[in-house]
Length: 352
Ligand code: GAL
Picture 1 (cartoon, protein in one colour):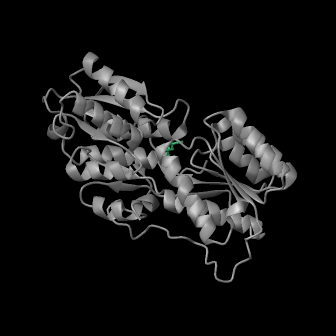
Picture 2: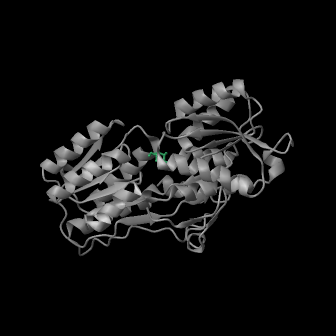
């Protein structure tokens, strides 16, 4: 893993200046656009590419895969040579899918791993057959990435550093001022944490860094409830509905993604509690519905998880392997903070 953050002792962290200087969160000027100029590039129409997604029903990954398919199409891959597969969150299914496409002689794979444990076997199968793999969205372990480096394997990870999204969530909350968050003024912010999947690095970092960023400014953070919402709206809605009964004194609900933040907002509405007024909610991803909630004040803010840049970068990397140009092993990107000020601007990007 390539750290672009300096992590200071305990819960305190600061961002490295390079990160601060990149996509600023209030401006989109730094956002990468598609990198490949296809005007004089190789004919890709007979190249076969497999895109293996951990679960199509995941709201964010479904947008990510649609964009990947669209972009492949725009670069000249023919539709019959693009294979999109859903592992239904099952590790064995994904391993079989990878094996099958490798056996069929696919030219490259883009893989959104079900979990970190599938990465090594997929890497081994693919490299033995000379098939390059671009991993997306779920970062492999540092030891695995070092192996790619050490053995010069044609493997690359494309994704953002989830610590940044957690920090941005924290900053969105801080920007409201302590008295607007600690509504009863008792000197501590009572919150729920609605987490993605267990063991998932995005979930872990977002949970840690959102809370730590707020605590770093001296606010007392009092966790009333933590639940695993599996990135899913309905699951989060149920968790929050139950938590509201057991711990009604909550002031803030921090969600690892927007699908779950939407579920939290639905649970609040169903309980006749006004999200954004009585209880604050923050998410990550910038799903269209979440941006609407930012605009109407139900959601404090979200963090744009730029699936457009990530999918284009992943496809571009696959093309560079196919054409023999090669890649570095890590291609990063920046998250963008979304609040009421830039919500329209982000909406234009995600709704296009
Ligand atoms: C995260 C995203 C979540 C979910 C997860 C799946 O980056 O924010 O919504 O899609 O990936 O690994």
